[in-house]
Amino acid sequence: NNDNHDGDRLVNTALRETQEELCYNIDQFFPTSSSLFTILGRTQPVPSMQGKKVTPIIGMCNYDLPPHSTEEFQITFPGNPDEVDWIFTIPIRELIEGETSEPLERWSTSYSHDKGKKKNVVLGPAFHIPECSKKREGDKIWGLTAIVLRPLLRKVFGPVFYGEGVGGIAKL
Image (cartoon, rainbow, N blue to C red; front, side):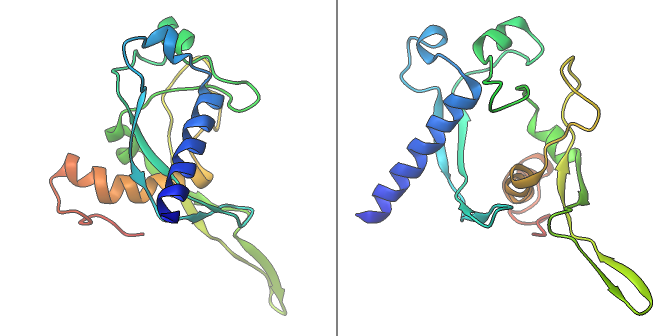
């Protein structure tokens, strides 16, 4: 089946990209298991800023991780400096409670009329990130990552934490 082949290809790509970005060595830290992650599913494709369709793969880590501020975490997930600035963990509840919106400059437009300039501002989601020695002013979860996170947090995880029906707080 072509759909299964495409799904396998997408999952394998997501796992490869995750390994490239986090730079973990599963054999070194998790020698008794063959899988660090369980794939939960995938979402509908989402357009990237460049207009390409991206299919987010949703997964979970099969292990309790040490806090991101510990040396053990830094050794386990050193990160690829060509791919990421730094790696952190954040509780789902903090993501939900820390959601905000900010202008998406690439999707906002400026134009002029006889009466002066007007700006059409498009707002997108953004999420705070935890305090850490590596955190810089203005660091946040934004862009495509935040666009993928928002409906997951509102439709899937929000109801779990706040007891509302599925989709009860969702407004995509």
